[in-house]
Image (cartoon, rainbow, N blue to C red; front, side, top):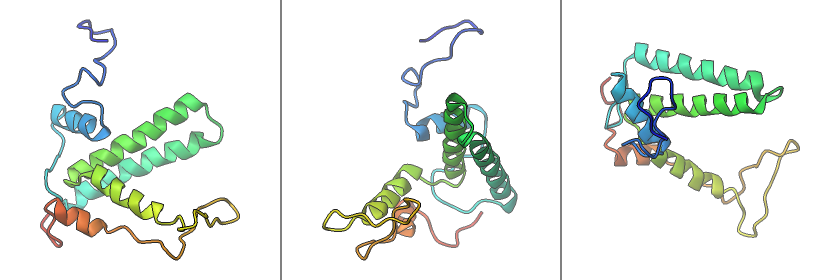
Amino acid sequence: MTSSSAGSSARSSTDSPAGSSPAGLVREFHRAFGLHARTTPAEVSPELAAHRGELLAEEAAEVAEVAVAGPLDRLAHELADVVYVAYGTALVHGIDLDAVIAEVHRSNMSKLGPDGQVARRADGKVLKGEHYRAPDVSAVLRSQGWIPGGEA
């Protein structure tokens, strides 16, 4: 719902020029607030990298804090914050995170054996089988214009 009064709800994501993808929404936020954003993958300064790492650690700690005890609405909020900061960190580095996630997904799906069987650890973690193929994140980044050893 769109509203012009200050105390009312913000625009919905579908009203936003960024659309509703996490990458687009975070890009809109970075532009609106004058935050770093690259269009090609590259290393960033150690200070900026450390700052982004601290933000991610802070958000992950908040998830860990509420993951067991809840409440569920707070867990959902904290999970969204982790994703938001992760997409922001990718944007700061010029990484198309959706493409990286697709490559990691492809790799994860290769854990499934050709017979459809899943190997699991006692705690339920899915294990890598003989058909597992590691993700080639370097290839994804190179396709986005990354030059290994590029400047910060």
